[in-house]
Amino acid sequence: MRIAIGSDHGGLLLKAELVKLLEQKGYEYKDFGCFTAEAVDYPDIGQAVGEAVAAGQYDRGIICCGTGIGISISANKVPGVRAALCGDCFSAKASREHNNANVLALGERVTGTELAKMITEIWLTTEFTGGRHGKRVEKIRAIEEKYNKA
Ligand code: RB5
Image 1 (tube, protein in one colour):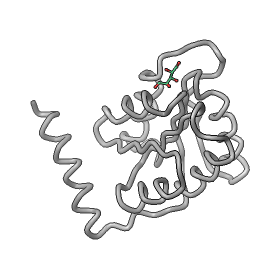
Image 2: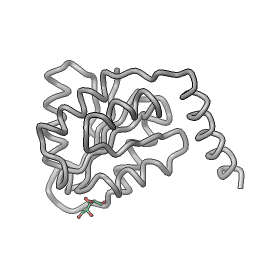
Image 3: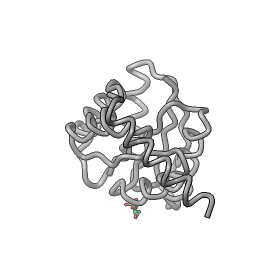
């Protein structure tokens, strides 16, 4: 599994911890930045990771900002991205099983590092259930299609 990971300055420290986790677990990844504590704009990173996943260059994305909110809103503007902001393990599992989320968003200023790592591991190892959930995810795609034509 190829993973695109990125953060703004508000998620930089959490991203570093998650990069270590990906390395420990042997995942292939690319870090889309940021790389210093200097302030950057979270939409730029959300867009970059979102586009890399939507284009099929990476199978999944992981994005972090202070709350996880701004960067997830941004990534979700990219057609084909289903970014789930998760602060608990139940949501992480459900976002994969029910929503086939292809991007995980986390908030460094909200979720503790160890919990964020646990959420990430669950999210990376949980498969989409399909079935009735497939029909609903298809409806999400149909919404995108409607507004992309407009
Ligand atoms: C940056 O200060 C902060 O606004 C950002 O990391 C994020 O929390 C936005 O949603």
